[in-house]
Amino acid sequence: MEFNDDNKKLTFFLADALGILPDVWTNPDAGDEQVEVLRLRDAVSPDKFIHCSLGLSDYENLNEIDGKKQDIRIELLMGEYSHDDMATTFIIFISRLMIKHNYNCTRGSVFFGTVEHYLPGSDMKHCFFTTPYLWQDKLSGLSLDSKAVTFLHCIPISDRELEYHTLNGYEALTTLLQKNNADIHDYKRRSII
Image 1 (cartoon, one colour):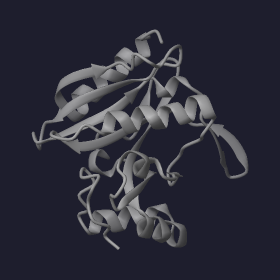
Image 2 (image 1 turned 45 degrees about the horizontal axis):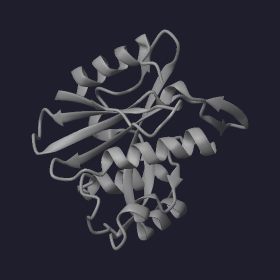
Image 3 (image 1 turned 135 degrees about the vertical axis):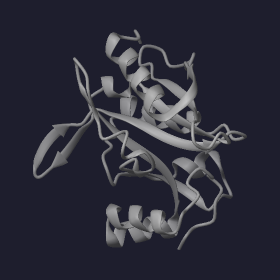
């Protein structure tokens, strides 16, 4: 993938909005369908990192909204503790599912088994996508020359949290995670339900 001007602007926007000490990781095995991952040390909590896909928004992401197909260009965010190294793996894996296997993603989507695949034995099994509420004042979206970018926060969830999501909707699960101060940076956390 050529790192185009819009993706450079996206990188600077994210570094300015979210963190310090930016570092971009490139997947050497990606071939033509390249998505990089920007890693930033959280400016508020230096023991945490914020990871964001770079270039996923270059690919079509068709979702049915109100009976119409809409192309929602997204970039994924994940937070993690500095001693862990899974967020980049998850972002690359999810990006590959979207690009090569036509998975679609929007607020409220769940990719089943994606966490369990890499962390067997953890209560967390699935990836849930929601508004990036930790950074909502900084990441409401970004309009660039060639695209409008929507940011989605990817949060590992348990089977019980998935069931709650299914019964009550994604906004209810997002609210529950916030109210319970779920440590969403810890991919081995205990379920809040």
